[in-house]
Image 1 (cartoon, rainbow, N blue to C red):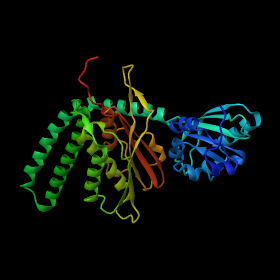
Image 2: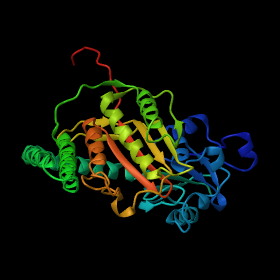
Image 3: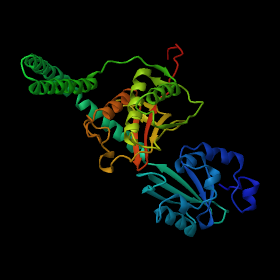
Length: 380
């Protein structure tokens, strides 16, 4: 395939021009595509590459490949090998992680020369983390299910004796002096705390199907934002980066409100009460091409709706990042470790996935959800 230059200004600088059909084909590809020229200069970037590198195509074309990826990355050697041999080369599971791109950006790289275009090389990046995130999400669901039976079995057995302990403490409270009354109150408070913990565990045992329908995720995010700004996040600045044409998601509005409120509350707590530059960014986007196979079925479900919640807090410790959605894993001194596990369960029940990427001052939770499909009423 031969390529000619994108615009007259680029042609004056000696760049590549794609004919309209080729340009449209590259633009709609869901994988990042770069065309790299002599001296590692960036000659072209498609829409997916803009998203991957978090810069516009205009900005990317002012830079060199060395500026976009980590120093000494094998991708640079891959480009030079293609330029030297004039043949296609592929590498798998290369880590492009950097402070700019975030940690663990694992990609498969496919590099090919452009015929009759000098040193120009086409780079196609296929991000491995999507499939691996789906695998981890299925593991998170399994972990949530593993405590479902535990919660159902223990809840009744724990709450009954706790009720007796609390009642006995209340009876003692009437016949003791003030100093001992502090102890009876402590018994009551701790009994109440354990009951609340058990009730949260019981939520994992709730397998009843919930009512689902079309949900406008922007309405949900606006509602969550208002709740947060009127309470725990009143000191934090909110940014919104929305895709205004986003179609409705298939889900339960109340459950999605609870999930997103949980994530926003976590972000606010990570930033801290005394931060003067706290910032939470809410994003939505349409990501075609992501599908997940349903457990025990050959059917696949598309997950094109993305909701993001990003904060500029200190980040999640690397040693627990991969286990963040497991039950009883938490970074909070007083946390139960069930909030994110419940988030994973609810999103899993919706047929979606949730994942977290974190580096200092940039922690992002992403939720991928299916579209709502209106039924035509016709039988197949």
